[in-house]
Amino acid sequence: MAEIVGAIGLPHNPFTAMALHRGDAQLADSRRLYDTLAGHLEAMAPDVLVVATTDHYNLFFEICVPIFAIGVAERATGPCDYPQLPQSDVAIDEPLAAAIQAGAVADEFDLGRSQEFELDHTILAPLGLMPPAMGVPLVPVWVSGSMRPLPLARRCFALGGAIRRAIERSELPRRVVVIGSGAFSFEVGGPKMSETSHVGVPDPGWAARATELIGAGAFADVVEQTTERQLVAAGNASGEILNWLVMLGTFDPRPPVFIEAQLDEGHAFAAWRLT
Amino acid sequence: MSIYAVNKLCRRVVQEPELVEALKADPDAALRAARPPLSDTERELLLAGDVGRLGRMGANFFLMHQLGRAEVLGLTLPGYSERIRAEYREERSADR
Image (cartoon, rainbow over the protein chains, first blue to last red):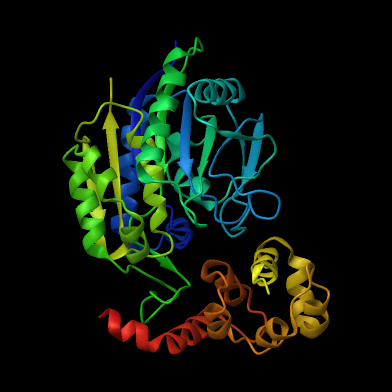
């Protein structure tokens, strides 16, 4: 029977990933944080990673922008949006993905299916920095966290619950780690960018508060405080916290075994060991 | 008038290296070939690299910054950012 053995929350800045692949010494702190998560991931010994993320206009645009979707396929390549990053052809856990979709739909959660897709930097940039993650099959779950209207925070948290029930009902022998990918406060290319680059952290206070609440295991509080107004103030990529809320919904609330923020980047790194 | 055509063009810049080449070789022709068609105003603003005005018209900033990343329409990533900061200077100082 499938069980969720751990969970991880992480950021996915592609420029950080490129610099770390180059061995940039200025990013020793990011290296340490990804290494810490990689250590936890290795100890969790997952058979599959269910990754909740936000498509950055790479998959969904012209034909349809689903609020929630899951990837059901045999393999996928990427990162399709950053050819400068190492390219991979990774296995998708098709039977588990199909079971999660069927279970969620039966649970009154209308999760769309994508059967042919590429993966973007939001999944493969962070996983590519954690060697134990590569070679483990994935199941991508996309949350529409960029294009408004965004789903409500409580709906994303509830999706996590539906994914959990679907996994726990599955007869597939799987050790599952759920990953939430993204930042809490971040602006890319918009008016809230910094004075010195095309990105910025408009609301580091929100990133700090979200990290504190998540660190205390106060998941209901972070759900309640993730309002549309807060997300607008925190930048055009701040909806990525919804991916964390999906992840947090997949297990009973508790403090993580590790959490650390990089507030000047508006994000945090966290791990939960559930067995 | 829908700003969708502008957003779609920016998105294609990430996915179609041929479009990047076309925008560098003959930007006016490349923009006229866009489908759905760009309005005259949209095409003129894109040719001028006026991302600030396009932002005011509702264009998506994440998608537009890709024009700077691809270095088309006279933009670079720093140049793109400078134009957005200039257009939104008032709101930015009110935010502080």
